[in-house]
Length: 505
Image (tube, rainbow, N blue to C red; front, side, top):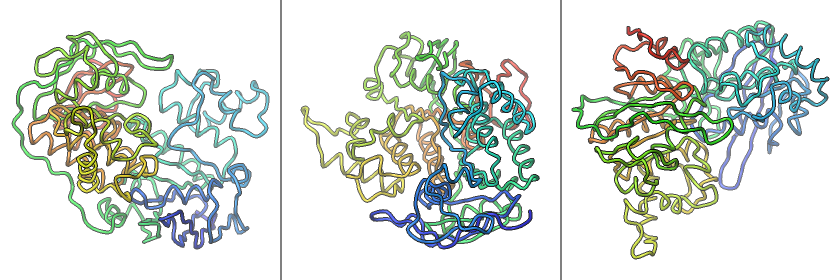
């Protein structure tokens, strides 16, 4: 590391009713990986949007390499040497890699020349990529490579990365870290946002911690325990999820030879998926994004009807039932896409509670809504899961991603399901909220419910699951006990090592 690259001084941004950033100041040096930490709603997104030119600050100044820096838009940020890899990819699946990269360039060269540059840059940085492959055929990790290469072609001096490892196997995380270290050796600075604190400790040189919009401290991650960083983020101590010995009951949900065709051109067909989960058990299902997780949840929820006997609840075939009928029987689900699938963006939290809880919480009587009961149930969710919102009348889209996630999970948990299937239950939530959600799932199992947790977070799955299987290209690996299961073995299972002899430690 050499001199200061980006200096942020007193950046403030307020919205009606909330100060997103309150006089935030920090420095990023050339050639360092600088972590930006904070719980949901702490102001991380607003801060990086101001750095990248997506949001204009109300006050405060920035300097880049000693010169005033105030990008009015992302184009000016990019021409100044600032690039960003977003958590959610912005790629067109029907186009190839080179065409997608060209769309993100101001003056792209001819595609033949661009393809050659993509090959050269991708090989130089250890991220091999075929510029002629259709994006829809790429794995999630390969799609992330497209986004990174698109940024690297701009020769950035500062690269902002938002949750970059959330869709990667452990092996792919290792490759990414090698690439980032190569970049920093060339003087590029990385601003790294992640909720995975052990990754922060392994990769980052310094960390700035935000809480309620303010910079509350800095630390050297490698010298700071993950729990200490988490407590700096939330401002207090919090309990880690506590597992208790549980008696496993009868088989609650059984899936036998479940095969489902992909619904779209770039979906993933399920191939003879078979497993069973017992009352009191947490079954973890891992896998890199795009390997059949959404299709599995749709088949279990009833959104995608299947052969009657392919899914059985307490021994009874339910494959032809729709979501409402399955919910009445006690099979509840929470999908990954919280805004648009799990919740209707423009409807209030109370209305969103009614959408899935009307029957089990008796929120309707003779065809009429019991609005008072619905609002009371919504307040219970807000209180029990610490949803930061003005109240139950707030629209779902007004909540931060992490707070909406807490609401969606709380809405299902408080309905006392007999079987709960969740996909990415702690996606984008901070350490304290993630611990609370995981504890809620463990408490459900302790109360006799069967829980299926589909997740890309291996630490999460190892923490709460009794048994584990991995989805790869629509096939489910052999289910293994998580006791002593190594992360390396899990990564191989996620990468498609079906039928392998899994190593334990």
